[in-house]
Length: 130
Image 1 (cartoon, one colour):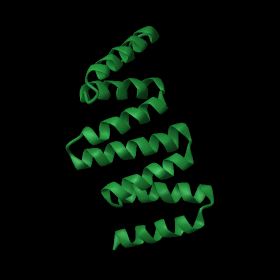
Image 2 (cartoon, helix red, strand yellow):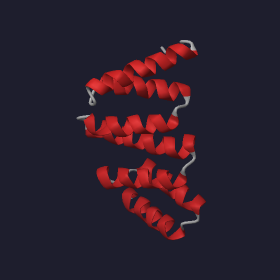
Image 3 (cartoon, one colour):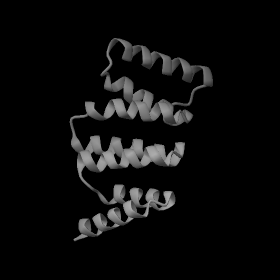
């Protein structure tokens, strides 16, 4: 677990970044950074790491889960509705609609007052259930 002092966390982050300098696709380093940034609230950095890690995964379900996590971080931790909408739309474009992503989009469109888009998502959700 990551129960280390503040300076140790910075050193751990720097060590993983150095690993990525020599091997940009090092999934172990990306996963380590993912845990470190999540533990320390480095939300923008976490979204970047998730974006880098997602295409490296071979399993489509894992790719979808990583893309959804990035979208949820944008929505819930960073509070950037516009970027969260774009990220959720990319999930549905890349992997097809799923219930959780459609509900996230509906919530975001509703709070943004984007009623036309909200209606489209709600219709998609009904189609998804049939």
